[in-house]
Every structure is written in C-alpha cells, then in structure tokens.
Length: 123
Length: 172
Image (cartoon, rainbow over all chains, first blue to last red):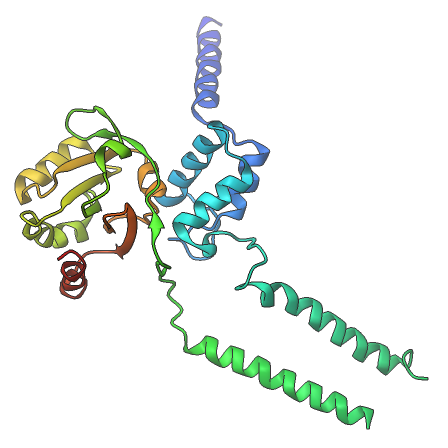
C-alpha cells in the first residue's frame, strides 16, 4: 500500500513538472504559427514543424507578443526579415493582385459559361 | 457568332495559362531568398559569448563602418570549411562579428582554439532567436552590413570562392 502511494505521488509529481515544462501555446500564438512558413522545411508551417528554425521562430513570436506587438506587427517584422514568402496569407499588393484577382475572374467567366449553357442568359 | 467569341476567349485563356506554367517550369524549384534592396538592421540585445555580458546592438554596431555578421556553430560541418575564408578576413578594415548558434560553449571554444578566432566579438545565441531577429535561416550564414547600418548582402550557406570575391568587392 505504501509503495503504491509513493508510486502515485511520483506520477503526480512527474505530471506536474511536465505540464510546467511544456508551455501550451495560446490560440493567437497558434494562429500566427500556422500563418508563418518554416523556410527551411518543404511545405510546412512553423506550427507543423519541429525544426530548429521553427522552434526559434516560435520563441521569437512569443517574445514579441509579450513585448506588446500585435499580430500584424509580427507579420510585418517577419516580412521585413524574410520577405513576402514567409507568410502563408499574403496581403494584396502590386505583386499579389493577380493571385487574389484571378480566382474571382475565373469564377465569373466560368459562371457565365455555365449560365449560358443552361440557357439562362439566352434571350 | 457568340460561340466564336467563347472559343476565342477560351483559347486566349489557354494560351495565358500555358505561358504562365511554361515560365514556371523554367524557374528553379529550389527557393533561394533574394535580398530586395537594403534591409534595416533590426535592434537586438544579446549576450557576449565569453563574458556573458549583455550587449545592445546600438552599442555594438555603429554607423560609419562595415560589419560582417557570421552565424556559426561548432557542430556545423560547412562552418569548418568556410573558416579559412573568415580567418583571411581578419586584418581587413571592418569588424567581423560571430553569432554562435545553438551551440555548446565548450565545443565552440575547442572549435576556435583549433581553427583560430577571426571574430572581434562573438554573441551567443543559445535558442536561435537572435538569428531569427537578424533574418538568418540557419548555419552557416553571413550578413554584410554597410555604413548606414543596412544589411546589403546575405550569403546563405558556406562562403565559397565565388561569393568570397563578391564580398571583397563590396568591402573595399
């Protein structure tokens, strides 16, 4: 009985230290991690990756959040350092307007074709 | 008549897509970040590798002279190969600052004893945050900072003959 209680105590202690050691990311942190590309990995976000680069990036994001930077500030900071490519969700600007506009254009053209085929647009 | 218009539109769309994809095929698919223009050197605080003193970027890097920041680690094999280039830079008219990336201090010291210490100052970057703040990707990496405190070149990966001569051209 005594052995069992010691064993249980030990497990509880271990669990506690474990929960202290791993800082659970907040929702905002996760949102930012998911929008940052791990630049040295292939097709992974910082959230997905456990590479050295991604782990350091997470620490920097946390540090910046703590120092009062907003989500947008952090994206701007990362863009300054690594270029547009680091963001999964690029902003609309001179270089990306085609990226944002083309799907809508295709949607309209495709819709027109379908409507025409269906005879809705026929007079 | 209307059908013809659709055929023409469809055809031009096809050509458009074809050109885009064809051009995309010609591009190398390994992403290599281009440094667009000059990047302001961000402010940072760090610790001295030897004395563990706190160092502010403003005190370390001042306007009016060139700086080279080299990110290295003792566990990184390419760093070993580029070390000769760094050693030959030692007597030139700029400061070489080392950033010791995620390294064990003893191993790093052995590395420097064995191959020589070309750096005028070494900052320690135990958790890799300093290199992220500097916009580095990993080890080895070399940043060239001009007299206006702007990063004007990044050499990602080890220094070789080609980018070494480029580097010398920049800092004449």
